[in-house]
Length: 285
Image (cartoon, rainbow, N blue to C red; front, side, top):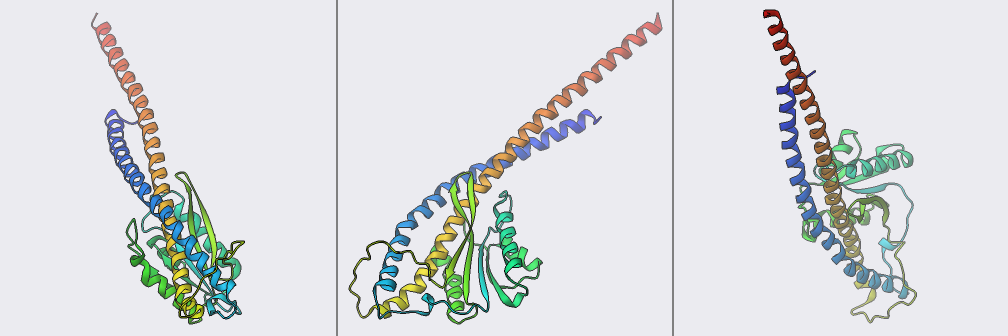
């Protein structure tokens, strides 16, 4: 059995650790509130730009764009959103496991796919496996603005337009609620799955619908990436909050068990001392 000093040392270190995890839980809860608000506030913009793009793409006969046309698939792009740090439960492992499984099923060599990694965890994972990472971004703030990812979104869309890959899939964690997030795969490019409403809004375009489409479609694709990143950030903070709460609860349970062990050991030691004193007194009689 461990000595009383060893048990007391474990109790002290576990209490300190529980204080740290509790503080991290509170910080993540604060970040989650803002991240969730950012994700929800972006939805009206996405709905409107999708309505306009849909109206132009499906309502105008003289407007066309390469981003709306499927082409023979020679190479596939994967944009994967992870976090820069761990301690977030299964947030990173679940999405990386699915992306890796998907690539293994669909492709036989690294020449058939390209990975765009947002987040240090994803970048390190793919590079460790010698997978084809062509673009990366790390060090994003907890509440990123569109300017923070403008370069990577425009580069990603540019790669598709330059035929560096012929389709692009987006992988991220969709925020459901504070305790649930879902790994989501979405085909981003080409934009062949733009949802249309039952009644298309009629717009008058100047100078022309074609010229507006050439500007608007890349912005729309970039906005889809940004919206997924906001969604993923909310999921990240929720996952970290949940993980730190579980760690704090586990630490408290461990402290309770250690206290019971400490008390039993102390009681046994006192009993032994009393026994030795009584035995010694009896020997002197």
